[in-house]
Image 1 (cartoon, rainbow, N blue to C red):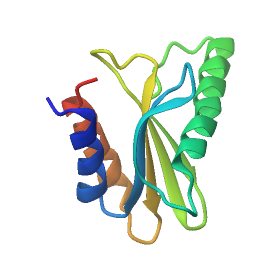
Image 2 (cartoon, rainbow, N blue to C red):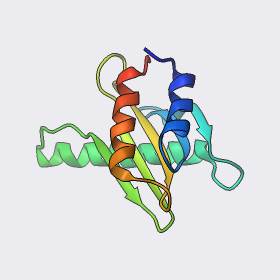
Image 3 (cartoon, helix red, strand yellow):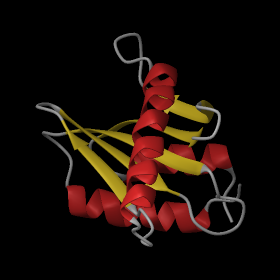
Image 4 (cartoon, helix red, strand yellow):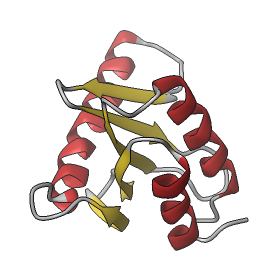
Length: 124
């Protein structure tokens, strides 16, 4: 099992095109850990804002009576991909990994696969 800091570092080092990553509690909107971002990309603000995305999708699924679980939410911008992966299992309830990728360097299928693997190793 990997601790939070190790897992966040692994996201940035092993996922091609990764520029920022955060572990976020979508019940409070708070980032429990962040890595990357910078002065032009406030990762705390982005993480908090994406809690609204997760909450809205969960609410919509409830209204529709969908009994599915969200695996990933993908937002594509002209130069970036934003991937939200809801955590499952041990202590992951109410948490998601938020990954920002450079669209010119990222492979979405590989990023999704690697993020799923890192999630499985993360100890929350």
